[in-house]
Length: 331
Image 1: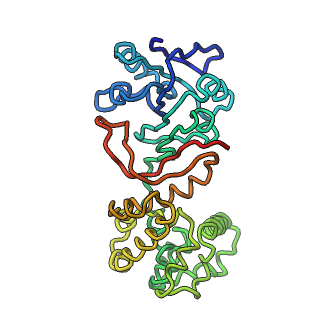
Image 2 (image 1 turned 135 degrees about the horizontal axis):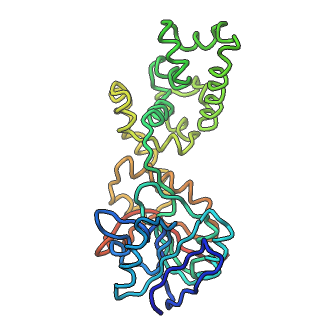
């Protein structure tokens, strides 16, 4: 029942001899952060799943073999069905907790893999992938889309066109609609520009079916307008949007509390306890994260979905946090 390393990228893998139940942490076991190995920083877990970064894997293995609590580092490509089937065969039904170490970019694991690995009643936390890529322009355009009914015409038009079309309009001192419908743009020289604009319009319409037709929406029915928008738009980052265009703040700031109220009402239908939810007094970005998480949770069949307090085992002392989590139920 000692510590070991299981490499599922190889055809022949040893067996995990640890006693059940086991707690698993994803995307950990091969890195060092602030001079501390993953194994040392995350002592409350038994199974560490990673891709096996060679430069820092050995330090984690060395620490694993010296700690009192036995554990296992599993090197596996979670995008490989073949590797995951062997991984699941080894651990199916043996795991009571699956969490994820959020440092830098992290992938996600298929919902069916969670269901196969967890024991009945087992719990999963932090199941979504994260990206450290920051896109100020994306947040800015989504902010314009979110508040389009109350924007001045110049900003309403700006969200509809690519940067290239907006720049052409500015260079020629034209309204952007006039620039786009200009006969000169029909020349073959501009084929790529036209195609990029058409692709952009199709994408924006997929996020907002009213991207073009705003005439039915005003300040008085913003909530109805918001109800049609994709979570991608609703989850825009306020600070990054304002950073891209500081003048936008004075336009949309008066409506932020109203937007928070809209998200709050939506979330109240999904939380475990409305009273507990209200007590959290969540910030806008926290409400947005929960809302987008709920949309993602629809992929998780065979689980009950919860939004409540729980102890976060990734940190010393297990601090109480408020977030979404899953419990495996029988199908």
